[in-house]
Image (tube, rainbow, N blue to C red; front, top):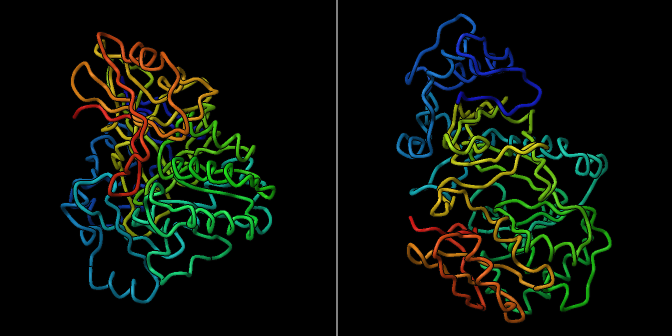
Length: 416
């Protein structure tokens, strides 16, 4: 199966002798001009690139960026430091999906523009941002990116350009009731139109609001980002907020890639931000693809044919982002297992705030969950049927499920 482009505004059938779209060709050449890394890896000719030529440009991996270091993208690393001190460049560090920290350099304002274009690509968000708006963010402090700019400022300065950053630590299960009081009070006081956050954090915020009998009548939309949401989270958010839920997906190093309505299987590439190639994950999974990213219009540390580690499922309405390839789970019969498969057998009236399905051995899984009551009888058997084979599922009600060091949560944890 050939690679193909996910950008709906570009026509391309993946044939080796066909010229790649002119917009992509121009971006490739701009990236070669901006960064010496790519010319050293593989030079390109002056003629317009055919797909066969373009596909010979080596894929860029997270591991290569970590090993080479950010200086490999520039002619003069001292000049990079000067531009950082002069507020021309920004330096961020991300380690959520890499074995070692990755330093990311971006020009000042790049992320804000990424965000603006991502919002404009979704009709609900585009309508909200036509006028000045307020936004609240509940996200991992330790995500170590410019998504969390309060890392660079002394507390309690958590209000920037109409956005309030709500939490002071990265583990929502360690938030005391006094801390939830503060967060809820700040939301009531600031009256945001947008609330953005890690889905687990937002689900637990929904619980805090429920306990305090508080509703936010100013809110117009929720943005689920930083981690992948479960339908369990979405149900809790619908009960607490009753507004549209938007799924926004990307990474610190590549920017925002996909946007759509949560659980509608209609996510689309954010055309103004990125070019996305789709590489088949496996021959027996015709609609499941690895994501390969080429950034668009980026001056500092542009990414060309970057293997992001993300996987998407093509649907009749667009795409469903499945998350990181390393987190994918498969049944014994080879069928792909997703969190939505698990969600579908969890009763809608079971008030669960969060869960993790963790594989213990080849035929044993633990379903760990956070809830105010015991899981309904038969849930373990229902999940076992989803997993297939002779699998046994044990249920454990927990007070907390700890996040990874990045502050993010995994809903499915198969054996490595």
